[in-house]
Length: 388
Image 1: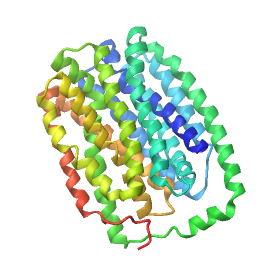
Image 2: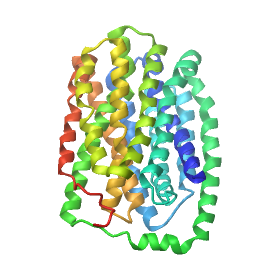
Image 3: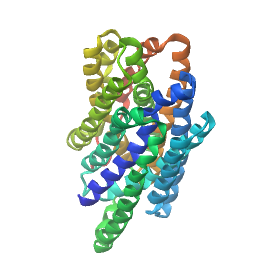
């Protein structure tokens, strides 16, 4: 548990730094005279950089453990954060966002492996605790933007470099602590690895993985519309202030922490496929209603939607790890990478659409994305990792 909590805190710090990118959008949009397409391109650059390297890092560390790679990743994030603070052009913003993305791509695969190793068999709980840190960190960004970045300006981003330095120190402690734990019980670790064998045919695994990828896309395309454009939607439609819009974005993102932990714990009890089914399709009626309600109900519905949808990721990733056992780093890197990459592509497309048809129309179109949850019906109905 100490390792899991520490991993969750480092995940919080890592994702807080990431969340400062969309949180600063209202500031840099005016400062650099950017349109929605350029805002989407910044998100695309960050999330594609965060996605491209993750499967490669995971594949390599499955074969050769590199626990201190997390420290290298956080160093990239530190450089990117300072670059965002002192960027003098749109091109500099893109490079800095790319550095933060690369840092994230190096951090997640090894951190995911460590969380699984520390799970004690309760994989959903372990991933839920790990995800709570990340979701909380993502939620803190808009709050920091509302009270620090918006009043103090773009250069105040440099103040948050202390978060990266704190994360580096914690990462060193985690690596040393888990090395001692594994050395104290080598036989148990080997025994657990010995039972890691696929329980489905290759064709069934490929089909299930394809469904998981489509479900992940529908989830991330929808949530990306909030991470990048929710503040603009609130300002344009309801006339709220920048700070008020950031506070509402914080409430939306903070609800994901509760959903992530609940999804992991419930998945341990009732099976991953049931959580996956509900977490995507269950948000559909609320998403369909969202574009047509007033400000109060917009806040309520967005929280409900995110509570439901955020319960999916831990179950999706553990389900995939159970499908392909022994490839923890690869699966962790692949699904975190897909999450970032798909979200970035969706943000770029949605940004261009918003420039042409308006932000209101974009949210009406996105409201149909949770319907992809119907595909969860075709997933194997039993927990792959459990003996039959």
